[in-house]
Length: 112
Image (cartoon, rainbow, N blue to C red; front, top):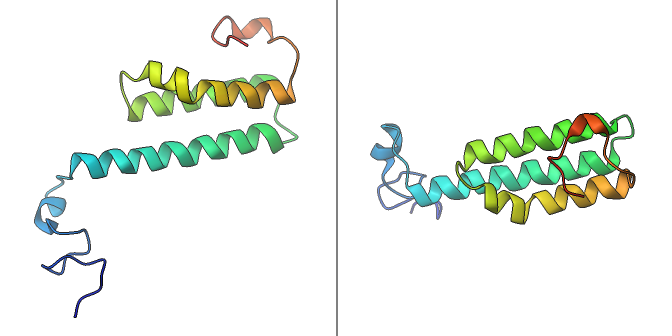
């Protein structure tokens, strides 16, 4: 009897082991993988914004910018989804730690 994670053909990837070996993946599975990465990195970013005592305001803003770039690299053309889902979360974390106006060096990228 095979493990429940294995497919009928014995491949641990749920079948289609040959496609996986050739570099082809199910688009839905790939999207779920990218979503898990984004969720993990967003959680890590918020935790760092809230807990890293050595993080300066400008470094925190740069961290959020890098996170935005990562998200949009993983999901090109989804700027509106970023602005709806993740930007408010990062802004809340920034505002809770630095409740003052943003430094002039930042420009108008953030709308707090």
